[in-house]
Amino acid sequence: MPNASFDCRSSQAVDPRADHRPRAVAVMGPTASGKTDFAADWAQHLDTEVISVDSALVYRRLDIGSAKPDAATLARAPHRLIDLREPHEPYSAADFARDALREMQALSAEGRVPLLVGGTGLYFKALLEGLSDLPESDTAMREQLQDELVGRGLPALHAELQRVDPVAGARIKPGDTQRTLRALEVFRLSGVPISEWQARSRGPRAPFPFRVLKLVLAPTDRAVLHERIARRFHAMLAAGFLDEVRALKSDPRLHPDLPAMRAVGYRQAWQHLDGATDTATFVEQGIAATRHLAKRQLTWLRGEHDALWFDPSTARAPLDQAMRAFLGPDA
Image (cartoon, rainbow, N blue to C red):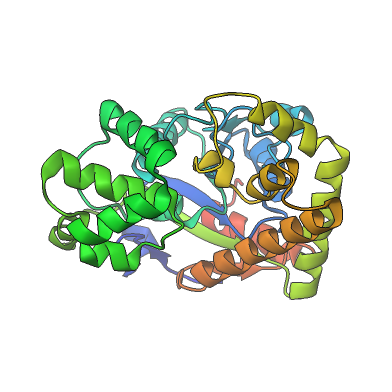
């Protein structure tokens, strides 16, 4: 067990005896790794609430395919930052960082320990490390870009980005709708490429106002994670996932290039309902896409050098002990 805490912005060890910041816990991990069950147990034990760190859970009506906590789980462990937006409405990492810090401070003011739980690495990064000081999002510009996305198509918009900002155009993948639109929005609002904004912002930052324990929950055996992913995907189908996507497709405000509709599972289901795949291929693609997501999440998590790793199915006792060691003898 480590005997030092970490400043999440500087990654420098901090003597815990001199660190008087309020405590918070970040429960990270790939999809289907058991984060929600563990966090719900501790939320109930600590009489606190979970702050969701999941880019799909912010959207209303994305329930089954996003594995949104059910009513029983929410009764046991209330969640914050879920169901914030309709699927056609934008929600950025900067929005999340602002909202999450507000909720952390509210819980701390009540004497409760915030539990940050999820697998969206960009959200964790935005909150704990900060993002570049970019111009704020503009609703009118966002709507204009969404109209252009429908009318001109993503390839044309990405080609425009490559012309106005070659650095960002090379870094942002041609299929990344959200980042392409954001980069164009920043350029059109400010006349300055987003890559230049980001280069300006690489200076030292103030310490994060909470002392954060980072826990990574991940099965040691990758095959176990793959089996859990497949089992959960089949359970989603049995629960009516395709009916959920049919209802979303009937909303004229939604289209497959929206960030919400590009979430893993939803993109494959949309294509299947459009007739692009048969049922067996859809299921195979949906499970494969979820496994690829888990792989990307694990790659990001390996860069979190101050995090403690546990297999929740085989090391629950040491995992609980890590919580108690961090939170104190009364936990």
